[in-house]
Length: 141
Image 1 (cartoon, rainbow, N blue to C red):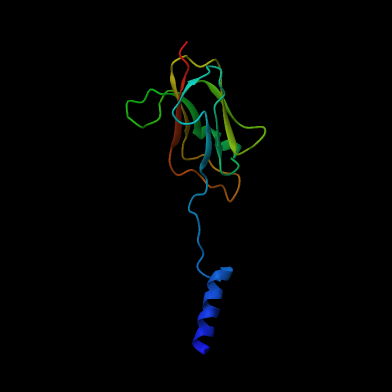
Image 2 (cartoon, rainbow, N blue to C red; image 1 turned 120 degrees about the horizontal axis):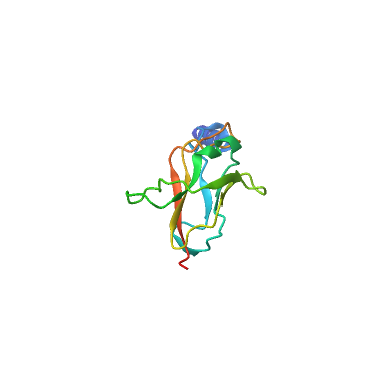
């Protein structure tokens, strides 16, 4: 009976949060790309965006870009920046909005790119550890 009581007490110790701590190494992640990755037939006047799991530090937006899909490497983001203002959404500061300076070219692939250096304004400024990107193609005219 005494051994059973000790086992119950030890088990309770772990279940009540006194056991080993579990941490997530990088909770900054993408929740939604708009348009979604691989989307086709997107309007040339679209305003792409990406929402992350935490609010973003505005001065880290220099590590975000809208690029042409001109990479020679399969599965890599493009390298040519498209002129655009990149800002936090007025509605949700966890969302980054890419506002192209002009209409996008028809029938063209674009990448929204987030590079290491994008960081949250929460939880001590957690940064992305890898480059993330999503591609979409505008409608042919």
